[in-house]
Image (cartoon, rainbow, N blue to C red; front, side, top):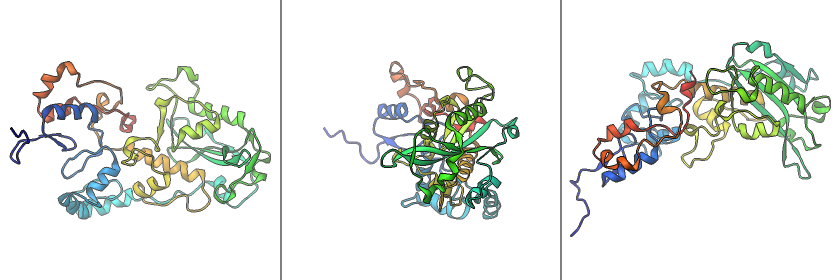
Length: 351
């Protein structure tokens, strides 16, 4: 007997991503592994949910988009935030705030571009008395026999208002063998009287922890600040600074900003795609990197999601236990979706 379903067989369709399955137990297994939630990127036309913003972009723009969604998006959709608006005029008004431009660096950063021999560091920590978010950016020079070992030679910290809180050149613990001047703009004279690494570590740690001992920092309700950046694991490792993972917001590892292959996108690509301007076109300025990471964080934090902590906290919960299999198989796709929760912490919950 042929058990292959014919074209008229009702298929079991996921209420989030619209995948279809021949058997209901396969749909339940899909829901168990997919971690769908209200915090996923969603098409504003057909309501399909996607794991990554890149997947949503492909769904709306191409190269093989859904035809009806692409038709509507072409006249009423923003190609930066991927939101849909009720009319083209509303879209034009929105683009005035969604399309950003390269930040104007502060005085210290401009002086460094001109090789002005001003102060090698500046500290404006008093500016951020009430700030809860800091972005960090580093400039790496090379050490070791072949110059391939990354050494932090400059660090920037900015607040959410994009003002510089702290910046300094840092004297590495080992000799610099490659200044990588073409991309870093760092010269030997910049590091000659630079701040020692240990001193920079203490200042950065003080600004981040905001008076709380590192072992007392908690995820919610404390004084410690959220740290934003791109590739923060690498930056913090080069600085020798430890910080709790639950207060780190890394645009290189945040799931909605990943490639569909689950690899990281470059900060340059993310800035161009979701903010609408170019960075790192010549000498890389850590201030520009800080601003881009902060703006990406603010844009992701501002996503219009239901403020549902239980489904967006990223806590590992088995909402589809095997002992409930028979009960789960009797549920509608919509009811199964209501049980699902995200496997990552959604930044919208920071607001």
